[in-house]
Image 1 (cartoon, one colour):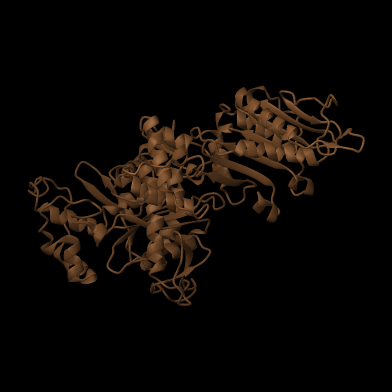
Image 2 (cartoon, rainbow, N blue to C red):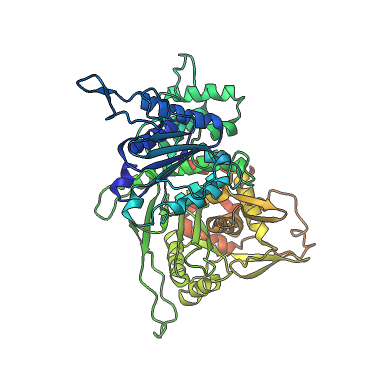
Amino acid sequence: MMWCVQQGRMIFLVVLKARQMGISCFGAGWHFWHLWRGRDVRTLDVTHDKALAGRIIDFYRVFYDSLPVVKNASGEEERLLRPPLRDQSSKARIPKSELFFSDRMCQGDTYVASNLDSRGFTTQHCAFREPAFYGTDVLNDIFQTIEPQLPALGTKARLNCSIMMESTPNGQNNFYDFWEAGKEEDSEYVCVFLPWYIHDDEYALTPPKDWRMTSSEKDLQIELSHMRRKIDGQDVTRAQMYWRHCKLINLKHDEDSFDMEYASDDQTCFLQRSESVFSEDMKFLTSSVTQAELRAKEEWARLNDTRGNPIETNGPVTGSLRFKPLHSPFETVFHRKVERPRFVLGNGDLCVWEPPRKGHIYFGGADVAGGELGRDLSTCCVVDLVTGRQVAEYGGHIQPELFADILVHLCEWYNHMMIMPELNGLGSVVIKRMSGEWGFTNFAHEEKWDELGVKKNKPGWWTSPQNRPMIFSTLKWFIQEKYIQFASRPLVRELSTFRKEGMEYRTAKAHQHDDFVVAAGLCCIGIKQAPKYLAMVDSARSQRIPTAVDLGLSHQPDFAMPSSSNAKLKETLGEDHFEKMFGSGFGSMDQPFNVLRGPYDMMDY
């Protein structure tokens, strides 16, 4: 709230919180203070049930009764600090539904949402208590009638107003929509997240001396401490982890209910009663994001900036790629040689968790904004095939020609990685510029099947109603089997709203986006065409029973890499690295392999 005042913004807050954080009491005190110090002020408290409405009135009574009574020389009370109420009696109590100071014409009303007739209601300060429990569209109806009655946008009077929505989560309903909308850069609202682990007094319990955390609880403590340090700079204590341990026992180890009542992050807490096809994978996804942020801090700490100083960050870094622009279309030059770009830290649309490593193989998927440059984002997801982790992400409102330039140099930066771009809409502009003007050729291809086998089509992926489910089904499989570890919070946020209706996958709300999801899905689709994957398929071929393709009984194309490709790959990676990745001779695998991680522990490499 102080930050809003300092920035000259309205105090319009959306507060997502765990239970018993004291925010309702604080909000009542905020309203009471304005009523006590002002004139012609009106406040409104809207609750989801009568019990909470009664508690708000009780707060007002405590505040009022605690005001000191000042007496003059003759012993008579003066209404300097304790204003008179409506009936002017010195023994008057605050009634059930309103607080009214008669000497300054200030009134505070408290209503249950279902009983409020908000049309014609004027107020300067409004608080919505537990709006996630109002019921379908009730919050929207109330808000759409009250918010326009505030003073006009840009006026000084509007700066003296406040709106506070504070609630625990209750699924992806209207309150969730307000929370997500508050994150937008142009929003009037400020999102405030108050997880359970910042409340040491309420949510901590001294553990017995013989209590030991499990390995998963230790990992969770590290992740929660990482998130808490962003809020108040503190670590999650052993006493807090013991409180969580005991609370889960009381809840019969129902972690979904715990996440809803005692939120740890602002994604999984909304998934109770969610219809997202990724709801069961959301804990893995959010854990992957936190681990990626911890890993990014270590990765970038090894590097120096342009001034020679170590790069200090608590997560991924943002920046942009600097490169020579493409030649003029009037020059007699067909292609410009793609040179390795320079990554510049600072404001930019490229988010990097792990910079490129020599010898690693990368793959990217790209979704081009479909013509609505002010609404959709052009996005790209980059995955390291040696570790199975997302290492970078691009997302910005950008012209397709410039997006093509960035993709070409992003591929070059990440060791000339292969990429699968979407062709729909302006995607054709991007791929033609990449191939025709930059001379880039390392594209993955959409595969179309008929009764004889697979046919290689043009570079890229043309999304249609028939193959769109394939993108998200493949993405779902990669996540479900934990083949891939995503690092992007925007991506996880979009995944949390994805539903399946018949064979079609779509976002739950019409206004929500799927740009990062499409890029990630195309990345998973195309990974199977990456050199590392093909090499492992070739190696595994000698370890299995011959198929009809092997015996020449089918005309399905053979995916085996020719020896010339093997030699080229060995030359590129180096013989030692090559053998460590794929085994000597491409035929020595004696154990099952993971599609992304290979036949050995890639994480130790």
